[in-house]
Length: 267
Image (tube, rainbow, N blue to C red; front, top):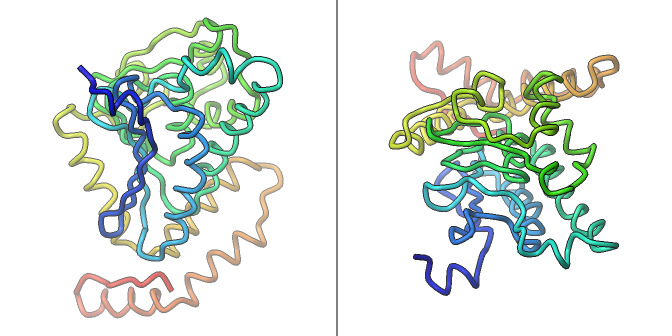
């Protein structure tokens, strides 16, 4: 049973472990549902990771191993999602989603258990979603009479085909892990006991590469996928050229010739 502190003090925690930053939704008494204060804290946490030159990968997760997040804390809806308050609450959600989508550093979602509503929305804003094989997914907006903001549909459509996005939103149905992987909601499924080790290993593999190269790849993929007809090719060319003009490019060549692991500095 959750103790009083867990119930009274839901929070969003930021921590760092070497080159990896962790953003953790910590409200286990409510399956890591996000309060308004937690939504509000997400952009600041992302900004801290972006501003830290030592951080190369960001991981988003829920506390414990029973839930990534059950989404917005429904206990706040009576006051926060009615009348003008609904617009304010939506603005908090939108700022959180945009912060994740706009993060120039690789963002991984580590999904234990339930990943529902706004929790799934957050996970879909990440570059990759690695989940345990007992995880479950749903966006139950239609079951609550909530209109799903058009801005938040973009990450869904980036992950799944149009018909699947409609199935998610029309039915509000809960999908199990294998179905979620098949439809594209999840990048990789692993046994529950192996999830954190798998995510850490992936993050470390990415962090060992040249940060400018990884950032350029992310920018190119995101720009072309979001603006396929009119991508900003000048900006993308500049990001790629910056890699060739970097100290890391020199280090990469030398390390290859010397048959050793490169030590990239991100400059």
